[in-house]
Length: 402
Image (cartoon, rainbow, N blue to C red; front, side):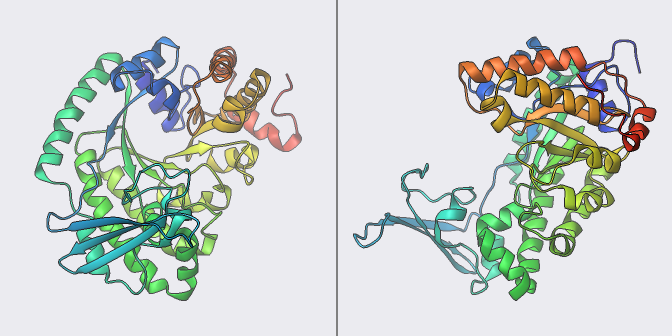
């Protein structure tokens, strides 16, 4: 390690579970700041001014339907129903797919029904894809990137990489998906029941999604990113019991990790709750970094067990709860979580400190807590990181008080 490593070198050391000059702190998402900035470059510069490490992101191409797909949408106002009903039909060369959702008071898309959206899961009256539907029609809704998409990606990636290189910053690519997309399309509870009642259908849906996802990953990986990230918010043990995860999620995770590694990148996986029961499978699949290590919202989280399992094998990105602690807590709450994360997860290398998974609220309390987090990190980040400290856990001598 150089005497004064760049932020990228520091981040890579953590991602490879090596010791850096100090524990990096890189917010994986910081919406409160992003909304104050005109573009990604100002957003990253503002983070650097705050003393943080930062990453420059290259996004996957946009979600596209086949050019032959047409859609129809309409609203139904039924006085006997608590909410207006929004209908949408996709006409494809292989037939129709239909969906209908309740337009609740907090619906954010007007009279439009988006293709992928978290709001669909609790409000859908009829999910887009069911065992009664023709899955060939789904293939037309998950089209490969166009030549224009790839050309635009290459142009924006070239600029982002050159800009990152001048500042010595990590470059990330996102976002792959598997189970999350299946839950948007089929419904979360519905999909979980189908793993028992109709597992062949679930396997077919996931295979179609994986084929589409790999076609979107490829042009991003061609740009030479340092880390490619897959989202797994709906792939947790809260939904998929470990045997289901092993059968339905793990195979694609392993194949995608291999593709990322063949491209010379690291494979990141976002999961902010109920990750502990799945850790061994993740690491066996080739996950290099788990994003979303949350000490407050994840009821399964045990930092000591997590570190003992992951040390030398998988980097941990997180350590502080973004919502309950940074957005809703006090500066003392923030300082305690920073101290716990660094003292338990940093020894031996492999920690990137961050609030999990986002800071959205933009108010005085949040900014005071962000400042407290940065100050606590800067005062503690040089904590000695050595294997002896890890071994001391079993005798209760770690972490230190104070």
